[in-house]
Amino acid sequence: MRSRDRSRLTDVRAIQDSHRKADHEQTPTSQNDGRAERMIDGLRLLPWTAMDGRLCYLSTNGQGYVSTLADRIEEMQLTMGEDLLEYARSILAPGERLPSSIEYRWLVCRLTEALSDALRVADSRGQRIPVP
Image (cartoon, rainbow, N blue to C red; front, side, top):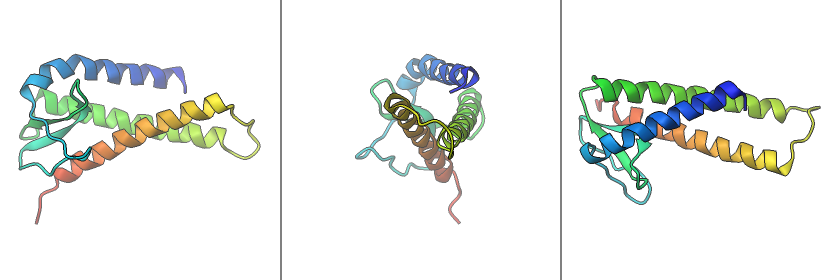
């Protein structure tokens, strides 16, 4: 992974860690067998978890500091996932040197994290689509 991507990942994790404590006490959380429950209108699934790993929700109208921060983090997570996918495709391309088992393990761990982030973003955005 390029240093720019590692720096971005560090920034995302630092933002998540700095806001977890403040959001943990104020944000309702819910979890059902590892999957988010469908929440009532006005609650948004956030792109980070509480300190104990539970999902975080924000009561919002879609505006405000935490909502804007969540939008930026989601965008950063998706961009990082795209960059990671591009990296994976480049090292797995025909004719490239074969990565070591450590490099494969690192790649699988990062792809797993990126997929988890992308699924949470999709779930969050899906919950905010109005039901006709």
